[in-house]
Image 1 (cartoon, rainbow, N blue to C red):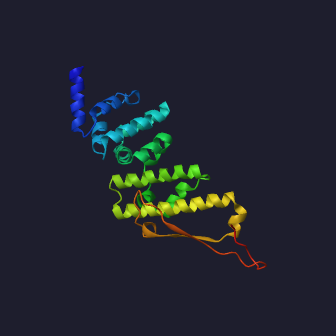
Image 2: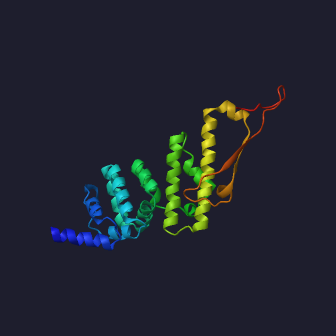
Image 3: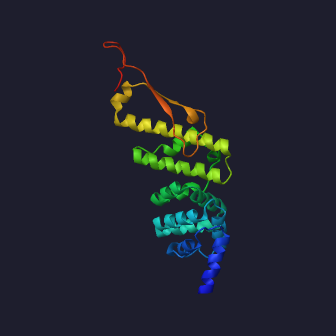
Length: 236
């Protein structure tokens, strides 16, 4: 047993794990019983930016899934290189997106296949991805689901730096529009009376956002018409 453990420990070290002991314990998790011995998994984890983080994220995701979904994920993971590269790449690059997948485990399906439009995602494609979000909480979840695709294209090299920055800016634009639609639905009378423009500034306006950029915007509202004037009045 000691020799086996020493061999596994050394193998994990060679694959780039900084805490091989913790990684070994994670690999022994019941949810990974069907794939832990598959060398493809370990090689794929080693190729990520942070193998330790990627493995932790994978265990959290699989633990959050129902048994049938878990089996589907793991089967696809070991047999399908595209999903393997995208999912483990994202988990190794972003703890925040790993947290999202643990809370919304069904979103792994967003990384299974890409449509041709996904390879050049813009405002229109992101608006479709956000269209069903009719509350702030649903919008936050949908935003991160879209962000999974941006990050996957980035870590897999499908998008270069300039394209990724533009996609992040387009996603911010689509999210702002969706947020305004939610607000308008909550206050329809005020929305009908208010003419509002949102102007992107800085990196957002220049299509140069990164993952941690603030989205700087200016809200410009048309002032109320004078009392007695025809037409709409300004909303407050």
